[in-house]
Image (cartoon, rainbow, N blue to C red; front, side):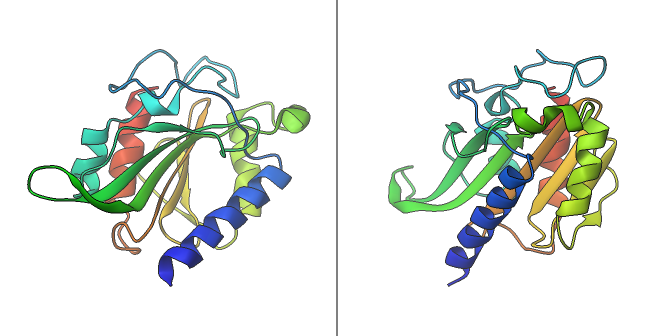
Length: 195
């Protein structure tokens, strides 16, 4: 089943990123429903330990990009040490707005940073992103998002850097067309506007 293979793929990517020092976990308040401009993508420091990924996108922004209603973002405790994540889930809703079945899709945004034990190897977001480009298999450059961006081999996994911020945005559970970058690029650009 496609959902099972995508979940396995996410688990593999997370394990690779953690082993390589690419992800981390932090507690974030996911109750915010509007993007915040509390951090800067220029002149800040890497990694940005105060940037809350749940404040960078709203459920309405995600719904508009993917064409499906999503629940409010919730902190993702599985993002890995040194990073913070936020997940928005989709569900099937009836005309009255009541959920008909369990969640069927997932949108995840991660503010990516190195594992603290390896942070000295990556003093800048650019050096960290360059390392990620080496370890993410089948990645391809993507133009028009931040200072540099790449799509991972499974096509619904967009990594991007703008100034001192590295973000990763991916869809699971069959959301969107795997060859369609437009929703990912739109959401990534909107997320960077909140940094």
